Length: 309
Image (cartoon, rainbow, N blue to C red; front, side, top):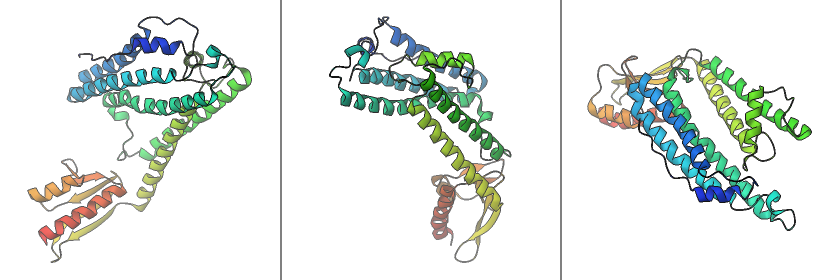
């Protein structure tokens, strides 16, 4: 699989290092680090191509997109570093505190973008381990979401404890919340200018908390829908003739249209435009059971009745 790498501004990387560190910049190190991260994404894409050849093109496009976006992120990060030097570099006298506050705010926003970019390799990984994705139609979806939620909440608690431990002791030595290799990695990352003076920056806690909220909301929605049970209703034209049957299938978590025979081309086009796809396995036009799907159903009925009434 061809690797596509984008340019890292080495001069900017070198100059930005001097804004927060006394150590000499190793020529080409920023490019080397960038290529190493992107190479991992391409290797994963190659695994997808071998195991799931039908997804090879999609995986390669995702790897190229990651390469492009990550390069832009690195260059912008180095540019932000140039906004204001570290107090260790310029000293405390007449230190531009306000300018530093603006820089820290931009760094925080920039790392929210980082988290979005890092979703791309995770998408490649999901193509390889597709069965590990928690699907709404999974018979154990509630149990799996509860387990995921517990893991996220445990992680949030561990990050807070690690920050508190570091604040009290000045290091993570002796902290029992993580394995030693994890502590070593966190300690190494803390040497980066963006990391701040604690093991887990505020953006890490914010992002994980957002995942907790979204997982909890999804879990609550699925529990509520399943408690209602599978429901069916017939949709008829104004003259009383049945158009199709609607099934809110809580076992599969799908909103389904069941027709008596194959609908005509115009009807199929209306279904597709409203997000419904044909499922040969279930012999139904369906989409995931959500409020948006119910709104799509309403639009289908509005558009079909004038045609078939």
